[in-house]
Length: 454
Image 1 (cartoon, rainbow, N blue to C red):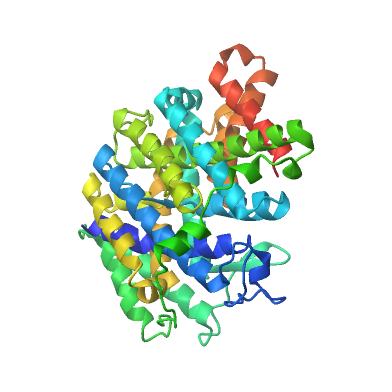
Image 2 (image 1 turned 60 degrees about the vertical axis):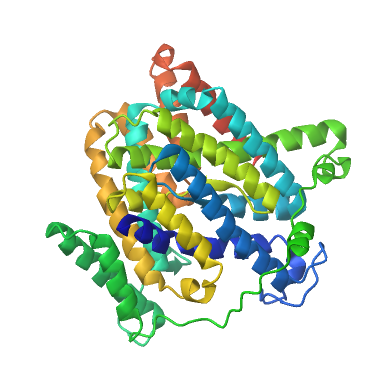
């Protein structure tokens, strides 16, 4: 129970961020200052407010559906929902940069989900897993730890943007600042959780989060927003979310018929790779945490995780939302003691309830969410001891895997840098014959992806 509720509080913010991210694929919905014009009529005939509300409902609904299917089929403590990183890629690369409409992008997502399903059905995911060297597997776990800890520090405003150094620690001298109070509450929460873990308090992460939420009220960090959730009728949702396969394969979106085919293949491959490796990274990390095996080998239950991920993506795109992926924040569920699908069922029920309690859910202070992310990241770093940093052949790929995840805000980029650098090191040190064919193929695929999709 604790693990499911803790995971919900850690993940729920994504269900609101994804719809807001997707809205950027409709430039006509915003004024010059970037503010949403609620009454603006979009290209699909809906107003911006109707579209945002519908996307939010679908975000919660698909997260609940995917998480329930995953819990019942695998009996593992995971949660699924629309991927924030992939929705960002869809919005800013596929729609805004490449010129596809949102409905055309949904068609590409549907096809990528189908391709993902074929990969898992044929057992290719096991070959992918075997192609990843052990040091990179451990680095993935540590890298995800750094990644989610960095996310937490950002959410709590402990670190902020800087034009010179990119990021810097926030100034704590002015406690009248919302961000400063949020940062202090986060630091307090992390220390409190750490103390409770040392004292072996059951549900330490959960209780630490609750304490932060309670303290957030007098600190002025928690306010119910003026947000009304008007559930649209079924016909409105149907008109809003239709996959446009004809538009996706239209010659107007490429340089002739051949250009269209190449463009669509690149899109589908990129979406599929992002989805596969986001889920695979979470699986590797969580596998270590719940000690199913130190090497992170996928057993039958993990095979089911990947298959459900592909099915959820197909369902999600049909409903009108971007790729549904297994959340990396699921590591918080495992760290809180979750070991079965019951944790996921609890989280799924809360995802569904979010449709009706959106004002409260969206008001959860970021400092409270951040404590879980930071503490989970800290606990995941102990896997570094399995990496031999005295051997540069292991150290370089492992370091790049870990470092590039938080620095680029992408699990896939971290894994790709690790595999490419590992392959290059082996080739140029005369050990190319020791490279597994699958490892070499993945490195080549990632290089092609970097060159063709930016």
